[in-house]
Image 1 (spheres, rainbow, N blue to C red):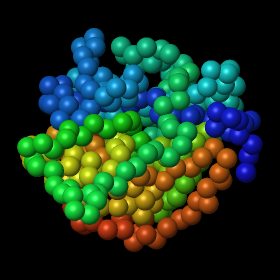
Image 2: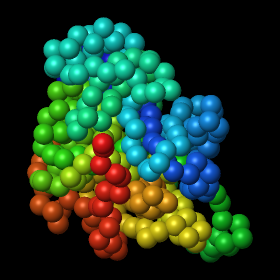
Image 3: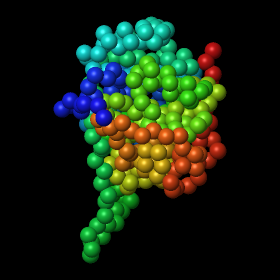
Image 4: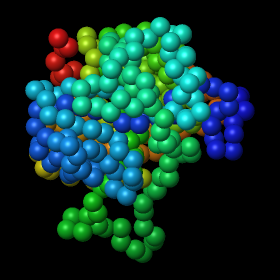
Length: 317
């Protein structure tokens, strides 16, 4: 194990600490506003775009712009302020192709063409990934008391933060090597050749970034942390009753062990309610492994529908 500071930061190791935010293009901003608001996020207007926040949290997790089709525009990762110079030199030594920020996007930090050409941004930012395992509540009632919650009084589910982000990639193993080398992420677990999960070295959930095999890049899902199984199920039911689907859940994953419910968005990708995911502290060297397919997806729950791993984004021109 490596030494860690009192803040939970892993000492003397260069690596991103968080996904600062993600950026999408969608064909209908009003449809996006409706979907993410009902999902429980705080959706705000800014300069003709939508920004995604969680209720009561000042961090901006996502930016949505108008486009011809749903498309993952870029991913932005946060680093500590004292690492910017070292990160710039490190990326130069990796031979990355530095690029300009996408049109209309602030040029904050370093921009480069990532694996499969996905634009990647590294910027100085506050750590948005937790430094300890998220609080999880099992809600029950005492003997002689009713645990019933009438539908008319059901609470609104509000995610607390972004948990992780899953992208499609053309080569999972090559992408693992790339993001370990450039961003300092580390492999948590994988199931060749289809999927892999990477965590941050300064303490993060079991996966900060997930990789899913496809013939082109894109977003598979964004995942949001909630505090109980009830919130996972209630959030999913709320979205299903509003007509979104087909969805997958309620269930429990094997790798990461989180409870899940995936809601299909209007463009064929997903937003996930997630609770009680494994946490990897900054001083733990996680024993990563390659798992058989039957031990890589879910422990219990309904079978996913065939389109669950379909990449609906258009190929880049």
